[in-house]
Amino acid sequence: MCRTLLLASLLLSLGCERTNGAYCDSTTSCGSGLACDQVAHQCVDGNADLSMPPDLLEADASDVDMKPVCTPLCSGNTPVCSQGTCAPCTTATDPEAACAAIDPTTPHCLNGGTDTGACANCRNTVDCSDPAKRICDDKTHACRGCNADGDCASLVCDLTPGSANIGRCVAQSQVIYVNGQNGPGCDDANSGATPALAVCKISVAFTKAKAAGAVAIRVANMPGQSYQDEDLSFADFKISLIGEKGTSVRPKSNNKPALDFTGAMTNAIVRGFTLTGATGTGANGLHCSDGTVKVYDVTATNNNGFGIDGDNCDTITIDRCWLGAVAGVSAGNVAGGLRIKKNFHVLNTVIVKNLATGARIESPDTSIREFVNNTVVGNMGGIGIGGADCTAVVKPNLIGNIVYGNTGAVAGTNCTLTYACTDDFAMRALATNVDLSLTMPGFAGADDYHLTAGSLCKDKGQAVGSAPAYDYDSKPRPDKAMMKIDIGAYELQ
Image 1 (cartoon, one colour):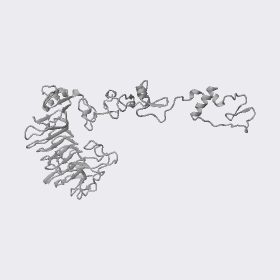
Image 2 (spheres, one colour; image 1 turned 90 degrees about the vertical axis):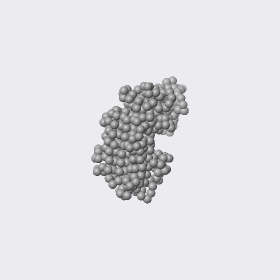
Image 3 (tube, one colour; image 1 turned 30 degrees about the vertical axis):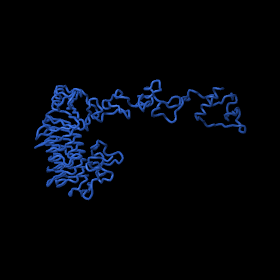
Image 4 (cartoon, rainbow, N blue to C red; image 1 turned 180 degrees about the vertical axis):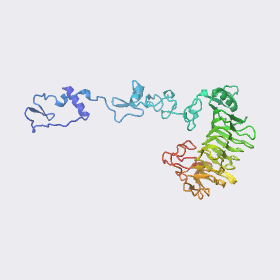
């Protein structure tokens, strides 16, 4: 009887109920052969034992979930429900199994730090087996790809847009290391196989990379100094030349570029350098006369030639670069910001305060002619063209650019600007363009070309999906709040 009452109490506490199809009480009688159960107020067989409620006689305790329920559901540092109480995963007999049972995507129990007791995707890199997501983020505890060179033991992360291996660390065995600092670890007789066995000269690293079949050269920054004891020329080799942020390179001789790429077989990636101080004729920051070169996050300033001279490079990509004067320096490159003659991609690039045309586009009707979301400001063309000069017969379409405040003719009669912010007389009246003849672009500062909230260039760009998916700062374009494209190299976040 006690068991029956306990089971009845349990079922009532769980909120179970059923419709009484044959109600009876002291005033409502049952039919012939039936008796009234005065407890359940139910008509039952007259021979039934009314000492136990008929519904409970048929109840099966195995159908009742006897496990206490945690309300609200457990999460955070106490994800495990134990005897009706939320508890840390570290209290479980098998913490990993407890986390996996809760959510297969967070199968690991954290046992250190402020998140101790929580279930996570990973605790360290050992838990990250996907080759494309080998980094365990120390904040989100989720496996991800590398997004900076410092994420990788090799100090080289593949950050090249469109690369099949983007977000993956380059194996240390595939890298040759350069550190021009005087002291331990810099000896051109070294193998260059590790940072501790770095060579001193970039040209030596190039020779060793060819011999070893390495895919990358990693050059350490020398604060306050430049690599300037040699003239650097790279020919007919596939290589990524990766500079630690701020690494400065200048040529040893007059009439030489800081970096020179030649040969039809050249396939190079250049990232992270400041190219400066080239003097004399043809003294460009970077020069490419053949092959394919991709240039990312490079600053080219104070060179006697162009910041970047694509010359007869088969295809050149210039992305997230700064070509011209830097903060505190009055002028940039003497011959201009850049020159391109064949296939080109120029994206998210700031071209400012050069002593001649910002962008000289001499390409004929090549198949790749992409000049998108750049900021071209304050270039001094004198009696020539300050902003962009398109000398080819076939007009290239320059999309989503700020072209403003350049001296001389602003855009050139053979350039077509669409979705532009411009003060150019011929282009400012086009339907897609923003007229800046009577107002300023709305920059954040004298040498800061980020847009402010009141800028007329904000949200006036081309359709979503047609512009680069990132800006000069590698921030998303469009920003998630507005989902509209801004004009220029920077997307207002």
